[in-house]
Image 1 (cartoon, rainbow, N blue to C red):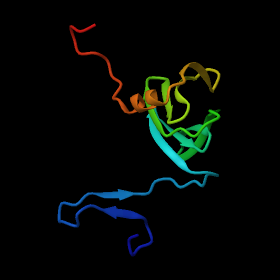
Image 2: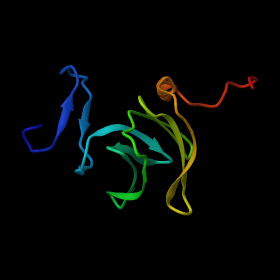
Image 3: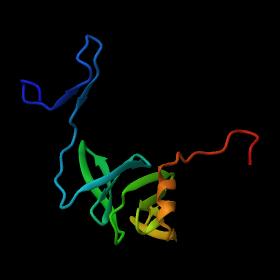
Image 4: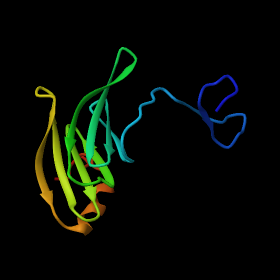
Length: 130
């Protein structure tokens, strides 16, 4: 916390140190276990709920949520898709429907080992591959 009352975090303390500034603050009921971005919005796993937040007029506002039924330990996104991983319930693929403002369940793989695949970087294949 800086002396002026704002929250900042200083890395390494050198002259060229980077600082983080708190932009939004919001309390949730339950632990935040994973965060990611999706189409310019914030995706956050809180307890058994995955919530999506948008920034409008300088404020963080809820845009929708998905009740997963388990605590997502990891979260990866690509486009409007989110891959939720849980050590006991495997992987669950959900899609954000912008028109309906809701998540839709697309697929799941109930295999504890599959949850570790959630941390993989999801991106388009290199040119000439595929």
